[in-house]
Length: 88
Image (cartoon, rainbow, N blue to C red; front, side, top):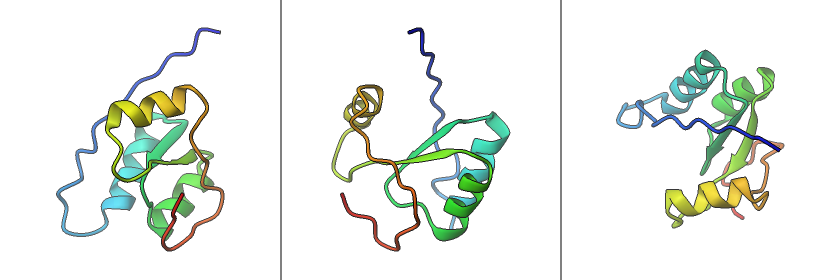
């Protein structure tokens, strides 16, 4: 299997509001197939799902390198339904 991964920084992380929607729109623009997030908001989650972008949970307190390794090793949980405070 020759999977290729491309990662993008969250350039919208310092916005005062609507960060999730900005990230969802960036993911759509970039043609992303997956978004890994701690807790996407309801509008962002709905937008991602409507655009067939899988949403995976990023456990709080883990380093980015660990989260990416978990995803690559199929150890990440998908978020299939929006939950106001997703905890894994």
